[in-house]
Length: 626
Image (cartoon, rainbow, N blue to C red; front, top):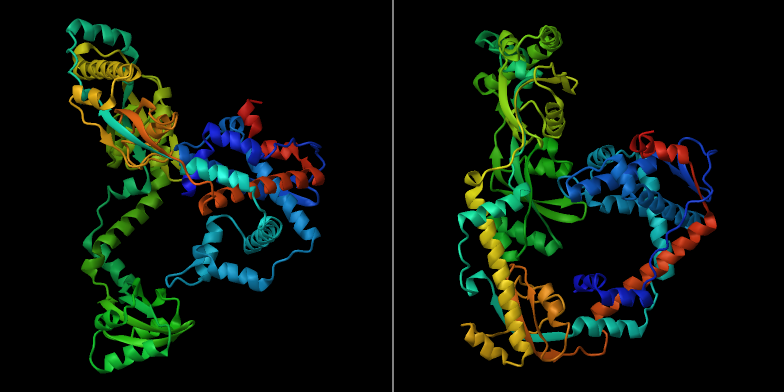
């Protein structure tokens, strides 16, 4: 329900309501730009500092979120044009202003509270769903936080939450606004309707060859080939060198004997557990086991559900008591043990035996490891030789043959998606390799492309196929489909206009439908967001709500068809505000108060920006070409 309220904000009504309800967060200018702040500080709000580390982390996070939403990482210039740096510094400044107020008011967070927040954070849960310090440290490392930074961040967040809750939790919203929103969202319309599409009208005439040719001439830009470039590509990496090597059985056997002691397969068990609420449940499992009942039978009797912890080695179970119990019982057996929160039942449903890994089992892995080790030792020497031969204008095929490597011939478009055929070119580097290929010239030596510390690529540009206009013979079917679709769409629109003209002239809706071999369909009462289907979607509902009783019209629905409708009933919502409307308005009211409050804090504290450091962090010089 709340989603429908959020959609209001996108309509004219929502904007009108916002004029009375929601005063948008006022933008603020960053004044007092100074240069006497330390280089490790981006800005200062009152006595609160925004460090370069904090800004860089927040800025990177914002860029990554944009990339996830759009599928493309913005350049520094794009980010500046979209105002991303300003969004980040404004948000950090808002938080800093609130933090300063919290400190001035002496609001703090106890160590016990911080510890509880840490233990309840699912990001740090281990295999058993409980806090795991190893997971905690790993997550911090992945996100670039130290423990001190994490706890400082949590302290400030908790302080801000206390302030916000204390100041705005009980803020009441105007009753009139609640009733207005409730009435707006609660009104419904019931329609008679039918659908008009290409199948509902006479087929359009098939275009002649002359008409197809004329259409192609007008729309030629849509019917062009992409430029392609054919390259011979040689990649060099330890993996590519290793693939050329053959490791003998004696060498593999010797390596196996040398490392045999470490080649042990750990026993792994699939472990399940059931938390027990009280001693009575524990007694049911203990007495049931004594009576010979299985774990599954007792689960059915008690109505409890087992949690599958997965198939784990003993060393992977972080709870020592659970590990000891699970690796003692037999497969299918179960036992009741004591846990941190009470008793629980532990069972093992499958066992993967451990033991010594045989030579035959390890043969392939050992051979690959030995080949890769030799390849790493030879990599630099081979790289130097390839570069020398390349400088001597030796063909790539000849160079590759000297070292047993393979040259791949690839036809590449500007996007570089065809480079999936070259395993040594990572997905993240395909665009860069394609860019180099399209910047190269035939009969000129292309530069080496380094894709990492031990991965290089060379290519020879063999052929260029420029983009060109496609002929009618090449795209005949596509042009025919395009012309037919365009004519069908025009015919459907003309038919819909004709039908609405008949309705305007006073002809009965049912009579029009019957004359078109259609049957009017009576809808369920529709809200402003439609009925949740693609047929009577939000666009159709918006057209229906544009008038009152007997209102008629048409709209294109989510299937691309046209819905011709007439309103047969208007049901007004009750004036009393619903819980959902009240919640929506109160939340909007709190956000408005909070935004004004933060603006006032910022203005009072003042913002001083280290412009030089700020510009360096957002790569402003590079973005502006300075």
